[in-house]
Image (cartoon, rainbow over the protein chains, first blue to last red):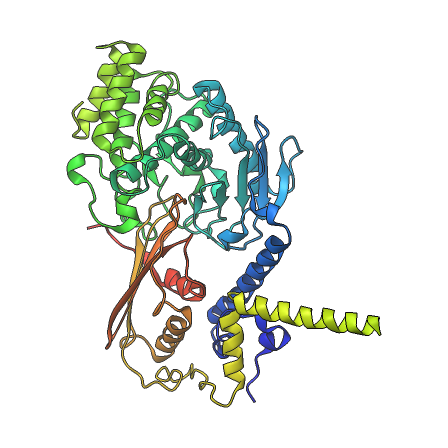
Length: 355
Length: 161
């Protein structure tokens, strides 16, 4: 007699056809059994969400902002359903550290990001109206990623091999939160050149935040993204580099860094939303060269030019428009023909864009 | 007596509400398929050991191409699996994962608000032709998770050019 253990107890636990799930649960292969159990957990989680929302519609609305720094860190407890974000509240603004380092890192680093935007760029949180900074940690199991879902940050724990927990990098946290700033300013669409610029601003502002926190001048920084989150199975010292070199080559887990540093090498395929994480290498390199030309601390001048540019661009802006805008902004900030404006030109020239 | 009628009315209303909710719920298909499963016409269970039988269908070759891109790291990973060259038990596992994942009938979708989401492309090629579905971490088809996890376990870095 064929039985369906889980479905007999509660048939609503199963999204999958029960006969399939039952076979998977009894499979010899532990991988398949694990996957089947995960599927059951997911459907149970989705059901509890629907129950909760149907009872309390207000839960679906975003909490109203406090008008100043207000951090909220949640725990997803390894569930990987975006519909269930943010999860269980673990620490809110002003509360003492908790026993979970991922929670504390998300709290501390989002605070540094908030301080940077306020003190250096005169911006009150991501929307410039003091919106709450919401982070969720422990998303999924061994999840090798962090993302901005349009409203909040979400961090995986990594699989240990390629990546460790994504909260460990201030540049990662700065990158994700800066996606929020982009959404609330130019809102560059996430496709092809505008999408690569979206990635570029997240990288450049994230890197500036890290250098500010470490009090590094442009010659002291390694200009590498993701150094702190690399796992034990990779030799690469980071995921991306603003410099001309490759961040990694022929790594057994990562492969070879695909980022171009010149317009002529731009990726034109469809993957990665038209290469948004690939082609960001081009403006990233221009940003780095400009910062090196200007010298000193990146947040004093270069990041300010870029931030004002971000506010002036629109959803469809391309590389050329971004380059021209940085040149124009540098001219109005520091004077036409100034060293700063010349530095911007030098940076873009090197990647094949004339301003 | 009023108490009896009151109780009866409440019971009938409760049953009606539950029935309506079930009908509207995304779980409806599961419930219906459970009904089908219990009925005499239910499909035969998958034979995981043979690698050749699935719900009474005759075996035919299947190739699965998986590509993952994007995410914070922007890594490009993937794998190309051909059931004719896989060991029988692996082929059977993959086949059952593909069948239950729903990718053969799922439509492509994209989450427009998310940033740094992982992007996925799964192409299943059979004698009937190739079927490709693309989605991301914010728009995963229901039930695709076990297949996705399996494919991610098989994936290797893929050079850009």
